[in-house]
Picture 1: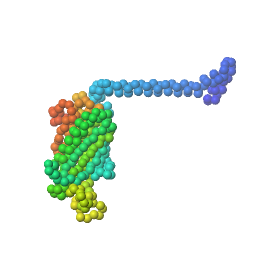
Picture 2: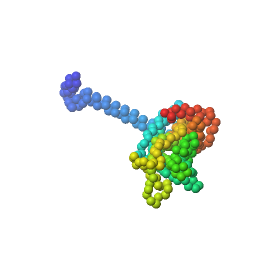
Picture 3: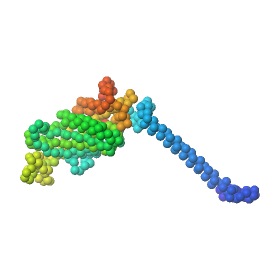
Picture 4: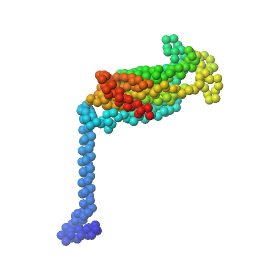
Length: 328
């Protein structure tokens, strides 16, 4: 036992006329301490090696990104662990802003945005549309990503996304503007969809489209009653009806989409089309967004050279495989 071993060590020290304290330190506690120090040193060395490897990977990715990605893609994976044609999980939540007529938050991996719909009564005016419509504004503030600290880049992307989403959502196969009519030839609703990116890690097109669609599907137009306050313009003579009000000018109703646009974005990366690119993958150049609208594909380029031969041969079949995923 340890007690006997310690006693033997003390007796051995006395017989050899040595210092007893020195002899005792040679017992089991000292051996355990030495072993522990060796383990600690080994763990520290392993941690240092792992840190060095991680630093090498970070430097490799930063200073030679194409080679960094090429090594991963040769193994059929991407640095974030996804396969070439894997999409990040989409997380949607509706009715996240109580003051809006409709709202939703959306997340694709680390990319996150919030969308809100504000319904506004408008009246017919010369040289302006005479029916209701959807107006879209996408905002990519510098706080969401260092990529948008360049004001020109931020404005360019915001303009592209706002115009593209507006075209898709006002498509006759997606939305019937007649449901926004209040008084024929006089008053109608205009739906203002405002999308703000909260954190950006790639694929702004899919992120914005999914958020806008979810917010519109969450939108409920309020009932309207006349407002008898004097000195108001015609469009302003209507107000939201209180609970139990009668003599309604317009009844409350939900906004309906004829079909749900389904976006799918690819980036061309070292000879591969990767699905749902992150921010780092978008930096390599060509990106293409496809949007399924009532059985028809709309195609939008976001930079780089066109690879039109890939649409039929590769991209279209891959995009079709995403329809069930996005429809769920």
